[in-house]
Length: 285
Image (cartoon, rainbow, N blue to C red; front, side, top):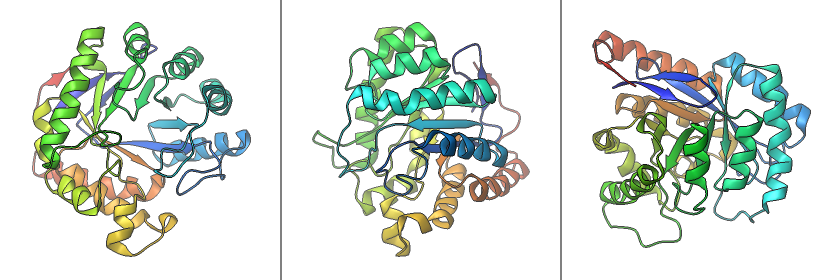
């Protein structure tokens, strides 16, 4: 499906024709694979620019680690980390900016600074104020599936449908337009290795939800379980998973190493175009 994603501040992004890369920018001291590397503003901004040069269309800025063992931070700490970075990127680049937060207050301030997208790892189901921020601003929204803090259904796809349909009902009730929504299957969020692999194998079933799909497998623990490699040595496995998920219908890929995923996905796109899978379809806007 070829789609025009409405992402805020008058910007749109075509999805479906070519893979879209979202570069991960963790401005935290404790993220699972790159914690502490980019929590100084100059280093974070330089890395964001490098990722854009390597092919990232979106930079996803996060100020709180979402790894399972991470300690939560308060809103002010999160905002102090992400808002100066967003301000600088708006001033110095034309890259699309996503803020990785489940807090409505942080999302509101980030959008005011110029962020185009809100990436909510709780799928709009934690902070009731988040839907108003997204609806009022017209920003893009990544609605992620998670199994944390609830009882999951035994079938991985049934649980995806159960959770994401609830999120979509919340979004619709708040007036969030379909054209602003991307869905994220939430690899690694309260899913063991077998569940993640089954989710990959059955990923195409999520296309029936009717929304563009984001895949975030980058350096995740299940890749380490398969390859035996530590987090910062999982980029080849990440690229392999990106290709497989592109073939299964994913549109956006949230990654740490942009360059290797760019090349891998260029090959996947070339193959799909050769098979005429990505051409001749109407644009949904």
